[in-house]
Image (cartoon, rainbow, N blue to C red; front, side, top):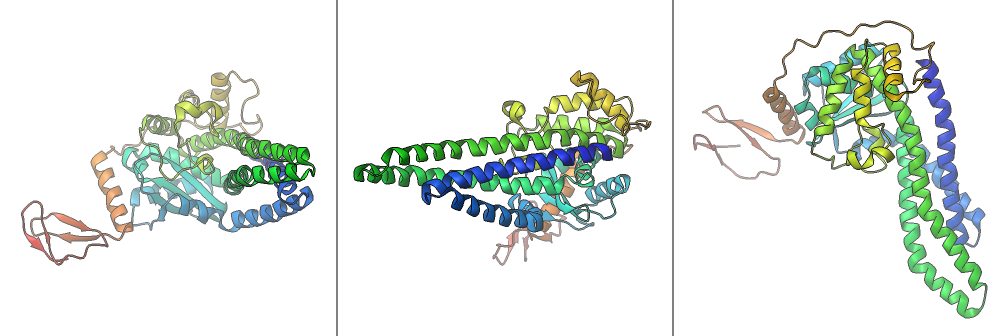
Length: 393
């Protein structure tokens, strides 16, 4: 396992440097156009790149959680979720319990973030909690714990921020070039001072502005896919029940909802691509979800060796995904959890915690009906819809 993690880290260094090169080329092109000095643009790009990396390192997790609308919960807020995270934390050997967040969204998804295993967090959507049984929830949480254990979370947080910066810079840069560049070129041509050169510089800058986000996204794809396979393998090992994650992925794939808070920069953080998966599998940061499910269902055991064998069979890949020395061991698949799924109870416990996190107050009518009032309610009385009694807040 650690051999594969080190291999991923080496690939990461190369890919992050490539992402930085794209960023510097973008700075050079803008510097040539706005300052007639590419070096000036590179210097500005380096300063921005350094600032954004510092922000990503120290505040990247908070930024991603805030952008996703995630809210932190306490152990008593959602006991089933807290217990599952605690189980996976123990199984993985993490020293510290990750913070737990819930995103109020009917879409089914989850992600992990943080600077290192000692400062990490897991966020799941309310839709996920309402629709997954305990084994399935374990599989998803195990996958996210694996990202923390394998130290993927810092890389993905930093890449998300850097990719977002490239996209924003390219967007506004192209607008400045389109609206200001044409006027500048016309003035240069009318005065007879290097008009052709100005136009060429503008065209080159425009090409780089278009290609930079695409190149950055392709680099991001390369960073993410192999890590997803390794996280799936680790989840199967932690839970000793690969069918749980497979079933969870099937439910997520069948869900009609799209996560509202997701964007192209944060999409690779989630367990599955939050956008239209049928249209994006070939260009997604994640492996095809159907392929991940087939690998998990093809496992004869729950060890890394079993995952590697299943990967070779499904992908027709002799090389495999996990080095042979790290894939040794035998871990039998356990029996399914005896806890029967209760969809009504799951929906109730999830909705209750979202009411509390949104600061709703609860009034219990004499007939037993619980009335939930938003924090903006200013009335002096509220009528029970069941018995008609008037209740004071």
